[in-house]
Image (tube, rainbow, N blue to C red; front, side, top):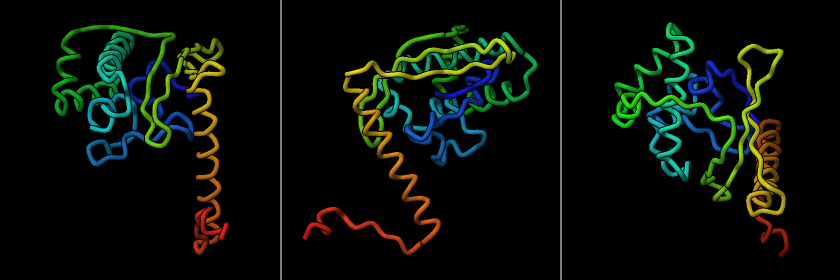
Amino acid sequence: MDSQRPTRCPRDEPARQGALLPRPGRSSSTTRRPANTTRFVYLDPAAREFFVDYDIIARDAAAMLRLEATRDPDDRALLELVGELSTRSELFRQRWASQDVRFHRSGRKRLRHPVVGLLDLDFEALQLPNESGLQINVYTAATGTPTADTLRLLASWAASQERLAVATTVSPQVRLIPPAATSA
């Protein structure tokens, strides 16, 4: 689940959805902060591998930016992001020029995770009535599907990575012993 303000969703949304997904925006082409999914989509070559339906994601990202531009045409951060993407991505220039405007409340995203492979995730955008402009995107997988099983595996892997990070912070001498080495 990731929370975001709709006026910021295309540009300030955390590009890392929880601990389970990789951290887009870490390559040298996208080191500018804040990291966001739209910058990742258009400026990081890894996005084409990460998003199975890359063309749809790229189209929707530009259309959502254009929607935000209609809501707040004087938003300086949005104007800067559009300028950056326009100067650095031919694909973004083409998509922006199409003047497509789109907002999705629900749908499916197919991701290729570098550790566990393909994830087919359904999403729903939920508006929070007491917080003007705040929305939560919830990503789910249907029970009993390969993606649900993969998410459990990924959650276990992420938890082990967190434990390892804590252990090495407390004691830098901690090393991993492969399971095969301990059974001998």
